[in-house]
Length: 174
Image (cartoon, rainbow, N blue to C red; front, side, top):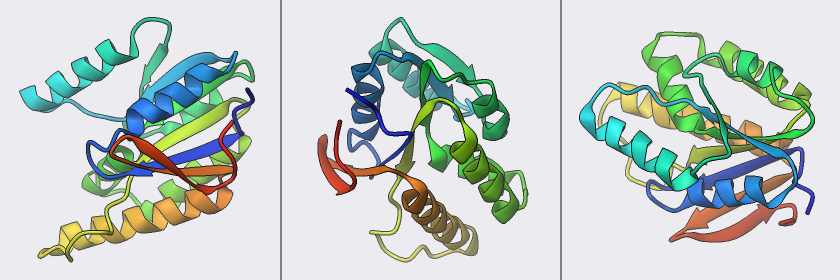
């Protein structure tokens, strides 16, 4: 099985997208690397991170990088398969840190293009609900939609996951 150079896995909250993305990474002969973008600010998030670690099991190299994904990707090697989980939390960190969204998005996309490892990036589809009632939420929704579209155009494989089931939007599953 050959994992494409860049795969985008989209889905709603608790859709099964992370588990599906993990299974893609583990299908190949590449050493699995997990780049975690979450920051733990409360007990609920701590429990979620712990649950994800337990589900992944041993054998993964974990890099915790909430903001500087290009630096984390630059350390990866061709014998690795990288899972970034997730672009949504990364973008949240960018926005809440009052960073330049376009500049960070461009740097991330450049890093995805030049990364020597195969990369699977998980992201939430946030545009299928109601229009948010506040400016920050609308800014986030619009930025997330733009980020997903940009990554999707660069990806070799794009998969939407709903109820744990994959639907290929672009490319072909390995």
